[in-house]
Structure formats: structure tokens, C-alpha cells
Length: 353
Image (cartoon, rainbow, N blue to C red; front, side, top):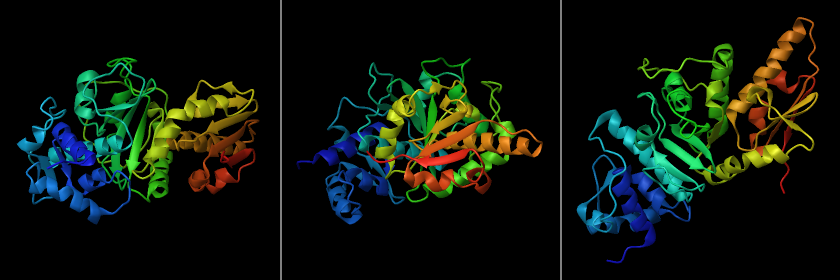
């Protein structure tokens, strides 16, 4: 039987990542993003009928020896668990790898000598970057154009978030500048980006006095498992929120964010403290947010609210603030009426080219 390229790609994915859910297999096969899962089921069926892969009763797909024989030089990048939470985690990692591959990002088990984007699964990244705590929930690291982004599948946003453990991806002392993460990419369910963004922002803002501190203790010792909702810390540096359907354009904007900042405001001076904004033409500070960095939104809200609190004590800050987002993200940027209506606060949108 002659296999099509998308079928071969799926077999190769299963060799490297061991397993994937049946639904995700159909999405992987849908290279044209038609959304027609019935049509994709007919593309998938020959793979089980001819003994290349097997679909279990639990809906999990694995590769068989006949499939492995098509790529004898390839082997698994991560180990597979037979049951429980460990198996569920492998499925999450496999799904994130699938999203990356569908967007032209290859999967690797080691560091590569290239600036082009590639993705390393979490189990392999732990071998590369020392000091990462065992309870971290990241699926892997996207390396692109000199930056490293820890990538998460957060689903409906209700996952148990490991606040301290995730910070270990950003350690200076136990890692190095070659492995320290530069930010996070959170991938949530399609259609729920703004709902989940508001949820995460509110959780962070309620505890911002603690979460937005500049200093924190690094440790390689185990920390207690947390059942906290997702919150952000200053140490995460950048936290981009997107969905599988929006991932192609989100990745483009993440890659180009530095260009937006450097060229967004003529004659502006770059600010060193991220929480104060990106650039400044005194007394105006600009938060330029093309890639929907929700931590940048938190810093913006926190700075304005702090100024509003000081105004009640009689001190009026001379600083004006501009937050610039794409039109589709405007509703989140305007989620706090007191911020949106404050004097000296301007929320603007990027105009299309």
C-alpha cells in the first residue's frame, strides 16, 4: 500500500512520541485544516487496517512494528507510561508536538545549531537544563531566533498550576543563559482565549503584591504540589496566550514582537524594567502588545492601579500610559473599568497594514 505524506508523518510522530489520542491523530492528518473529521477518519482507517498503527479501546493510538519499519533510523524521544497521570502527561506532550509540527516546527531531542524554530519535548529538556523541579507542567520548549519559550497545554484553564515549580524554568543559578526560558506560551481551548485570559489576569491581580516581586529564592529541592489556579509571576517574563486555531498567527507575532517594540514609537527610549512598559517618550510609557502577552497586561493594570491608589493620597503621577493591542484583544485590555477610564490612560489598537 502506498501511503500519503500526512499518513507517513503521523507514523513518524507516533514513533517519536509513542502515543496520541485518536481525535488528535485526525487533526494531525488534516493538513488543510478543513475540520472535516469524518473525512480524516477515512484517511486514518487504512493505517489500522494494514497494521501500521493500533487504536486502543481508550481511544489512544500507538504505532506497530510495521509502522516502525518504515523509519528504522527513528526512535522514541520520550518514554511512555502504561496508565494513570504519567500516561495522560505523555498524551499532552504528544498533542503539543502535533500542534508544533502542523505549524512547520520540527521536533528534536537535542539542541540544534540553528536559529530557525524547533521544539524539544519536556523530558528531553530536563536533560539539557539542570535545576528544573519535577512538578513543572510544561510540555516542552520552543527555541526560535535566540529565544526559548516553555509551552503549556492548559485546556480549559482549570489545571493545577505549580507556581513555584514553573519558575524553575527561569532560574539563573542552576541553569544558564543558554537554557533559561525567555517566556511561556499557554495554549488553551479554541474559542475560550478571552475568558481564560480574564480568569488568569484576575487571579494574578488579586495577589499582585506577592506575585509581581522582582526577587525570589531559587531551589533545586522538591516543593509541595500545588492545586492553585493559574497565576503569573514577574519571573515568567513573557506569557503569551493562544489557541490551536490561532497558533499560526500567534507564532508569527511572537517571533516579530521585538520588531514591533523597536519600531513601534518613533524616538522612544527602551525601558529596562518590563513592568514599567516597553518604551518611553517621557512622560508617556508604551506597552506594545501584538502577541497578546497577558503578563504585560497584568503589569499595565498593576501600574495604573497603583497610580490610582496614590492619587487618593494626594499624589498625582505625571506618567501617561498607552497599551496597544490587536482589535480582537481589545475587550481584555479594557476589562477593568477604573483602569480604562483613568486619566492619562490610553488603550489603542494596531491598524492593519
